Image (spheres, protein in one colour):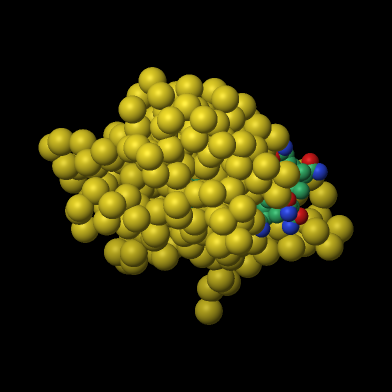
Length: 210
Ligand code: B12
């Protein structure tokens, strides 16, 4: 039997990962399941890093492999787009955090479901994010976080939104591997998830779609 995708990623076997991804997509498997298996591999990589068995070099390499795999999967995630925008969404990773793989997946999925999305990038100061919300009249703003030190910056962004009188008109979502419902409450966000599709479902539900 062929090796599991998550284990191949953990073994940093780039060619085997990409072949397996292509092979599974070739059998018309749900691309979201293939993507989820790649993400599980990244979680395993993270655990090894935490135990001190992997170093930064392995983390970087795993991210490169994940990016290549995602580039193969992403076109399959796109459905026919709606002929009008379902709503405007800003998505970014706040100051102190440069992780962007999950953020980029969320953006792909939101666009595939007809949302107009602006990518704020990574390491974004909370004040800049709030300024962009003001300019764009966004309906949703999504903050992605993979390191816990980014939590106070998410909280600050929400405080700044309140101070600018914008909090009532924009829904705040947070996501990323280290977020939890407790972090949502600490930050003062409306919604939290560690699954990009749940984020899309939240936006669809809020805007009256399905
Ligand atoms: C890849 C990786 C890196 C890469 C990032 C490359 C890149 N371009 O993003 C590199 C090598 C650069 C890196 C650097 C570092 N990393 Co790192 N990294 C990881 C790793 C292995 C995988 C993260 C990942 O991309 N997962 C795959 C994606 C697809 O999953 P995801 O982000 O969860 O996204 C999904 C959902 O959560 C959701 N989603 C994501 N965001 C959002 C937002 C919204 C609004 C919504 C709705 C949904 C949503 O959508 C995605 C699909 O469903 C994790 C381990 C882990 N357990 O996650 C460590 C990890 C996050 N890193 C960690 C650390 C410590 C670091 C460094 C500090 C290491 C160092 N000593 O320098 C630096 C930090 C630099 C910085 N200032 O940000 C720690 C964080 C610990 C903590 N508790 O804070 C982790 C948890 C590893 C560990 N166990 O120790 N890292």
